[in-house]
Length: 253
Ligand SMILES: Nc1ncnc2c1ncn2[C@@H]1O[C@H](COP(=O)(O)OP(=O)(O)OP(=O)(O)O)[C@@H](O)[C@H]1O
Image 1 (spheres, rainbow, N blue to C red):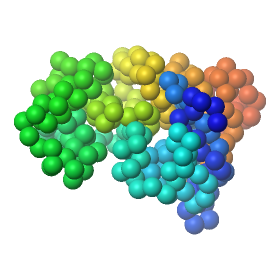
Image 2 (image 1 turned 135 degrees about the horizontal axis):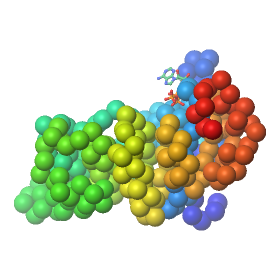
Image 3 (image 1 turned 45 degrees about the vertical axis):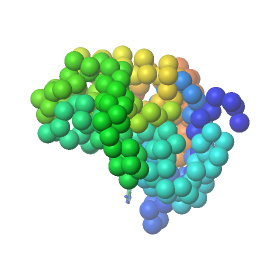
Image 4 (image 1 turned 180 degrees about the vertical axis):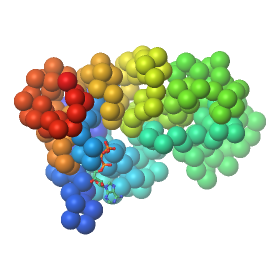
């Protein structure tokens, strides 16, 4: 194993009845790199993220985290080991403040054991962790705002802050730019460019300009199968990729 590989899949398969949503996928995700995942609709991108965070169990194959197979551990153990996941659908409590949302994310991770630490001291620790996460995404000035009062783009930033508050080593991001205008997307691009210096990021995103700008490695999937992995330039020049996107609109080119 290359020493800066954090997470790997080996021959990963997920079948829904006769449908092969993921078919024999072997990938390696490196520390301090952003690995983009693209592919036409139904390619299996969300299925892959759901498996990497433990939400779905593999039909066969392995998920290996820092050299250890974690295919059969429970979903909350994925998070406790440092695999953080943001969702396509917004996951925030709109009636709580930004700070409270980040605190809840940490409490969820700690589960029942959090009650044990309940004290003024632990609340301060929690607030500090949450505040640092908000600072990292550029939302420190929104700390005490109710989440429903901040813009849509800021809500997506808040979701990333909620993942960061759980102290992950790896971030799995599912379309963090969905529904955003150009300016808001640019904010997220700038944020991810900063975060990838510190974390391993796996990014599923339909915004091709964004994914080309951000990816150190890029994987194209088609019909649950791996088509190609390489640098952005290698992928863009690959004839198989052009062919896979034919009839899908000009999503790539
Ligand atoms: N829970 C499920 N039960 C049955 N089939 C599923 C389930 N989840 C996904 N699928 C199927 O698996 C295939 C891959 O779906 P997936 O959502 O992973 O693709 P995707 O690449 O994320 O697509 P999109 O870009 O449209 O979000 C699709 O054919 C989908 O219908």
